[in-house]
Figure 1 (spheres, rainbow, N blue to C red):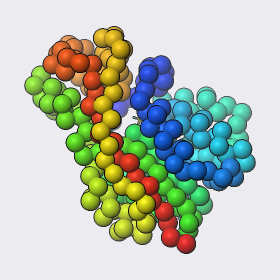
Figure 2: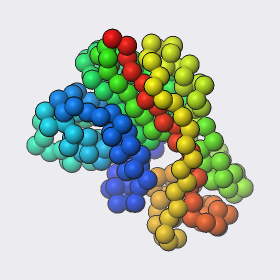
Figure 3: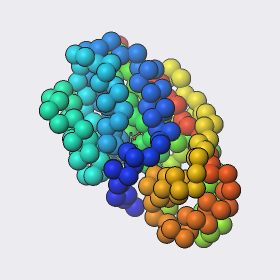
Length: 240
Ligand SMILES: C[S@@+](CC[C@H](N)C(=O)[O-])C[C@H]1O[C@@H](n2cnc3c(N)ncnc32)[C@H](O)[C@@H]1O
C-alpha cells in the first residue's frame, strides 16, 4: 500500500521527527566535507540541518514519493551540493558503490518490510570506514494506538509497517558486514497540545488511510492526545 504524502501539510506540523533527525545528525559527528546519503529523505528537513554541518560536503536524498521529492527539490533550489533521486530503498540504490562517507535515515526504515535488503544497500553505498545512523519505529511502536485502530475495526486499512527489534537488526547488520556500534529501543511518546493538531497529525503522519470519523474514534479511545512511539536507534560502521 502506497502513501500519497502531503509534503506541505507534513512540514506544517510540529513533528517529533525533528528531534529524531537532530539526534541522528549530531551522532554522525560530521567533519564537513563528507558525502552523505539521506535514505527516505522526505521533504528535506534533515538534509537542511545536515547541510549546516557540511560546508564542503554533499548530500544525496533518496525517496520513493514524488510529492516529497518535489518538496525536497524546491527546498534546495540553486544548491548544487544537494540532490534527490527517486529510489525504492529495498531495491538497488542509484548511488555509486562505496561513494558515501555516511548514511542517515529518519522515520523511514519501518516502512520497509524487507529491511535486510536495505541494510545491504547501506553496506554497498558506504566506503570502508563509513558510518550509518538511523532512527525509525522499533519493536513495540504504537502499541496503544494500533490497539485503538483495531477497536474501531480499521486495522485492514493500515499499511504494512515493520517495527524491527534489536536482535533482528543486529543480525541484518552483521549479515551485510556492518559493525554495530549501538542498537537500542527507546520509548518516546509524543503528546499534542490540542485536539486539532492531534487530528491533523494522525491524518497527515500516522493514519493516512482511515476516515475522519475513524480517526476521531481512535483519538477518543486514546484520550490523552498521545502517539506512543518506540524508536529503534542504530549506529554502525563499515570496517576499513
Ligand atoms: C515519515 S516519512 C520521513 C521523512 C523524513 N525522513 C522525515 O523524518 O521527515 C517516511 C519517508 O520514507 C519514504 N519511504 C517509505 N517507503 C519507502 C521506500 N520503499 N523507498 C523509498 N522511500 C520510502 C516516504 O516516501 C517518506 O518520505
